[in-house]
Amino acid sequence: MTTNPMDCNELVELVTAYLDGSLDLEDRARFDMHLLECDGCENYLQQFRSTVATVGKIGTDELDPEFRHRLINAFRNWR
Image (cartoon, rainbow, N blue to C red; front, side, top):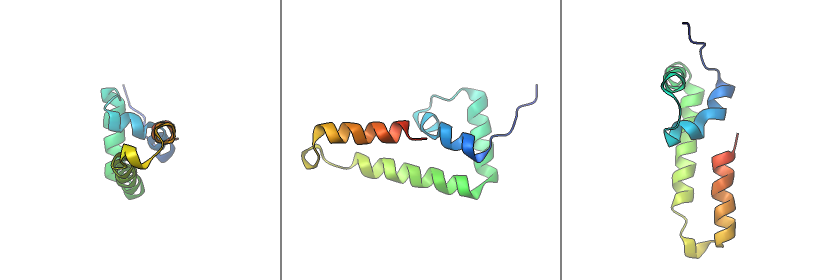
């Protein structure tokens, strides 16, 4: 069985699943292979991780709880 290589658009769609560890083995391997070959997507992944880490540092006292919840969900569901 031949596996189709992942393209940049598919990587963007799967980035949150990749970071959550919820990709199946085949898709994770395709994702990792694409990262090895595409500097743009490697940079995108690093920026996405940085954004998630920054949002995670926002204290609950600094943000309305409902807004914080919507913001975190927006990042999780962003494609």
